[in-house]
Image 1 (cartoon, one colour):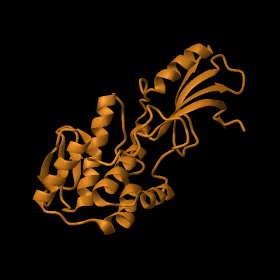
Image 2: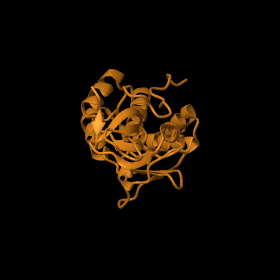
Image 3: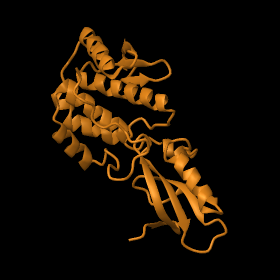
Image 4: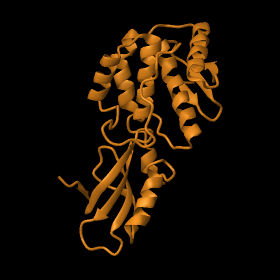
Length: 229
């Protein structure tokens, strides 16, 4: 069955789990002076955005090839919207937090050093939050601010650090709680909290947090890491 969106036949598309969107190569279904198209589409949305039209197919294919490896990204701010944020928090509250363990500042630092060593990233600075602060990863200073002293919360912020560093190393954009981040969470919760992969994948998939794992992937993301040494 032909997939047609906004009078454009979708010929090929590649999914980006860091941004939760598709890069699309298509062609107009009716007569058009520039019938070939490069466009982007948010997962779950019915509209194409940032549509660029071409007279000939080779030019469109060339641009799509660059988009499919992350060399071209959309400028539209709608693609930076963190659509999954609240759903991720709600999923963690129900499915992960009941298994979280309280940690003190020394245990937090030891866990941070352990994870960053396993993932081969520079250890972020760790700040124990004051009353007015909240849990967060500050990418501009590579700092984790920790208010809730439990292993789940710390691992959540470490996942932000890992995904941000990986995205920067690949020269690609990312959205904070996009599916690539959720896959990183599953890694960390499995390896450092002992959570079941099957349990987490099933519950996260039910909430639609894992993205499109069936379509061709933009710069194929790393899924679960090997067990740490």
